[in-house]
Length: 251
Image (cartoon, rainbow, N blue to C red; front, side, top):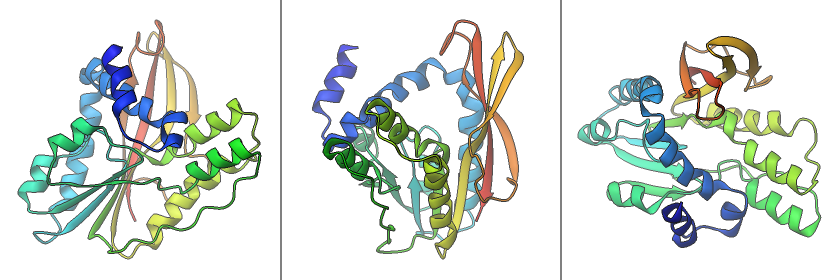
């Protein structure tokens, strides 16, 4: 706990990133990966396999942009670098130890929704949230990967707004996710999208509830799906385990 607190204190990040919980979550995920490594490994391996399949189709030295790079646990970095590709890692915050581990990677700390800073300012100035401006890439990569990111995009904003009694409207969650999908679709390049589709709750291995996580997003059926045991019994609850149904698309 002391190490995590010091990491939070000394990691440089915009105020909204810290206040809205993004840095805290990044630190917590590192510990969670270690605790749940055995349960997570099949999902991590599947993500790595899919990314590598797409990367191997590219010419040597191509540019790959990974959205939601996090701690790189689900990215086959050694293989990508061995192919000679240039990697740009995009996330709202990266921990320094991750940057130190991959000195040859181009790290970009960017909010792909364009809304978090706007929401933070709106809440603290009692204003409505203005629409996000579209993110125009300076150079189009040869492959864009949206990695275990889509369903997560609105969650911190919704929690922050609820905490401060700020009304976002009933379609906010759906609109944020759809905007990300629309942005991916309009990029004139190869796109790999990996996202959870449903969240399943089990009580002693008996399914008790299934909740869709993508809502009514305009996406075709995924090419393939698999299960991610994201919270084994004892992680989130002594008797409840949580599994994600995950899928992938090429857009």
